[in-house]
Length: 312
Ligand SMILES: Nc1ncnc2c1ncn2[C@@H]1O[C@H](COP(=O)(O)OP(=O)(O)OP(=O)(O)O)[C@@H](O)[C@H]1O
Ligand SMILES: [Mg+2]
Image (cartoon, rainbow, N blue to C red; front, top):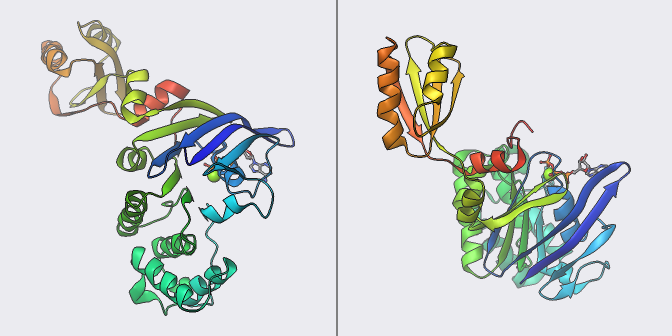
């Protein structure tokens, strides 16, 4: 394992940010670190980056312990923090030259790395412009470029797509995929399920400072079995008696009336849907539109934690 975090614990005053968090990531892997607000994600990232001192536990990167300020393992890390850190009055290229110099790069190597990083995040054409004139997504991409100059083996990304336009988001995903394909390890922190589904094969779910699941996406879905959903727009809302009748239909595991919509949960939609429609028709309720969806990671997360990611 390229990254090994073991039994991390961290308390801030009365708040236990991390109780006991362990996970590992292999070279070339994009590992998702998923959890709601306050779960402890940034604290874990800070400890791995050597910026936050843990109360307990250890981190190893490429076999070397992280911890002391001069640790060689630290040079293997590129950190893209949750808060963007750039010099707004310096053109994009100068920002990168500055960050590169901090890593001890100079001369031709520095110039080449800056050009390469700008290219990777698709900002070469804006290299002479000031970050304060950039969109949120472009600022984020520049911040990612700043973390790549010293060619880290491990890239830590802390919610890198918050406030980012779709085009920049795609550019960021492309960058991450290219880095992983080149054998780098990426820890991708987010509370967006669809990003994990798109980028990661494996995901660590944390909440209240503990690991709730460490599994592949498929494993996670299997561990938290959830039903498919049939969502119907009806011309009249079904009363309690109709809802009870629907819920008792064979194959139906639950019903919810949400606004003007009826949601029916069922393991096998093909079998359940005709029964639901018949039941509604018998009561004179007309269906104006219907659609269905398979369970997704959001449903699995809800089943695991009892809360949704966004309003947690
Ligand atoms: N420097 C700090 N001082 C005091 N409390 C802190 C500090 N950093 C984090 N905490 C607390 O620790 C807990 C975990 O915070 P953390 O930032 O790690 O969560 P997170 O999962 O990154 O959340 P978010 O999704 O909001 O970024 C929270 O209750 C937070 O208030
Ligand atoms: Mg955070």
